Image 1 (spheres, rainbow, N blue to C red):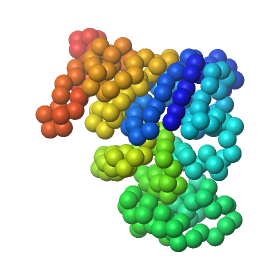
Image 2 (spheres, rainbow, N blue to C red; image 1 turned 135 degrees about the horizontal axis):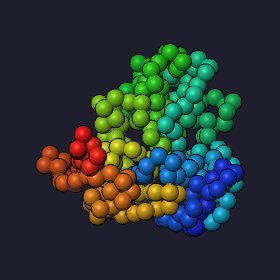
Image 3 (cartoon, helix red, strand yellow; image 1 turned 90 degrees about the vertical axis):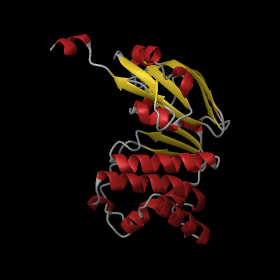
Length: 262
């Protein structure tokens, strides 16, 4: 599905992504982790065609996303950014309907299958009660759930999420990742940029850990979610154990030597 080779990308200055190579297969649930400014969001922008590579190659479904017609790309990739600035008072229903434009065209009327996809997405994300509310009047977490519903309404096989649950409370985060897990079980490929290590370990079966614009570690969660790997990425001492309730690896951060003395 995704093939990246010797990728370099940035914003006009020194490259942010320095030499990225990876393959992601259909049906994977992948978490991308790493400290701030390590290149996580830049990688998502390159995979989604927002940012053009300055070196190397990117293929998504055999296509270069930066040179693909936007409507055709949207049929294959749905993107949920960390935040979306919407200044016009579209209703929640109108926001989610936008996910169908890649299928019907911007000015074409929606058909029954389109309405069905929109309704299903709003039911899944518990946003039906936001259908008539202006998006400029809802909370950040509610707006983000509408953007997630819009992505689901696209019915694209690949979902790219860039800290998509950052503005949600813990209940909504777990609810969203439970939903993503169900989508993944039905065949959707999920790639999620995350900061929450334990949330990533709980849901993602593969992790890609980035540092300084490069991939530092990549593999099954159980193999690379270790104190040695995590400490080398985050420069923070920690312990990792198997959580008794979930059976998944769980990290506990330890105070640094300076803090321990104070």
